[in-house]
Image (cartoon, rainbow, N blue to C red; front, side):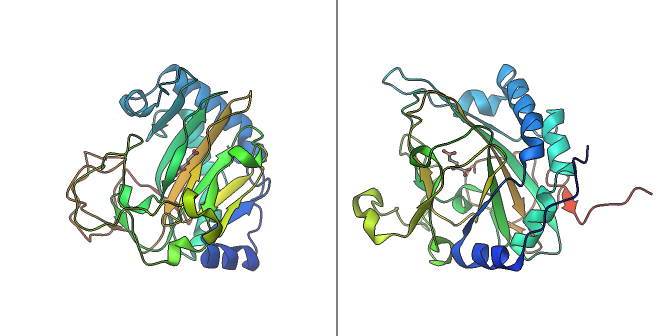
Length: 275
Ligand SMILES: O=C(O)CCC(=O)C(=O)O
């Protein structure tokens, strides 16, 4: 369901995203908070096999970090958001792309008190996609204090480097010779241009797949629910990583370098007009 006319992404916001690889969008998805919260309730009551595998339960007995992805086609609220919210148009503008194709959604619920830290990483090496035109819209559904919000390193998407994709336990996601290990960012935090914001439900932090990011545990007494909607643009091609990516997309039969065109990744922008 269309909630209202889409907000305008101005040129300064596009330029900031292109230059810094991260930008805060204030209140762009406020009309969609209830829809997405309803979808997350439904998902958590019936997680996918990925959700069961990906949820991190801290050894110290604190609350889990629930994660699940690739559920948009079975959770009606998520599907409504993908096709009817302004997200696709916003993504196309930020990516400077004629088209916006939905890559997948990722639900991240850090429950109150969860000690699980999201380690520094960037997403592109985890994914089966290459290209410069991409964006994740990290949309909080709860107020989140700056100290436990997403942290990003401004400009890291332009470093021309890719870092080894690892699981939360530090093991490699797949074998490769290609990617370097990440430097110890926390030990040298002053050397990096780290940005974070306190956010409200319906804000979005838009960040590039190569932007390094992470987050502290949830030391607050309320849940930190986030819906991260991931988009790719005109230049997206399939990347055969030689191992299982995250998400894995086992049904895909594309060859390395082929355009990322598949019903798994619907083109949502430009909008199709009904015949
Ligand atoms: O929410 C978090 O803790 C991390 C989010 C993240 O890594 C992502 O959306 O790619």
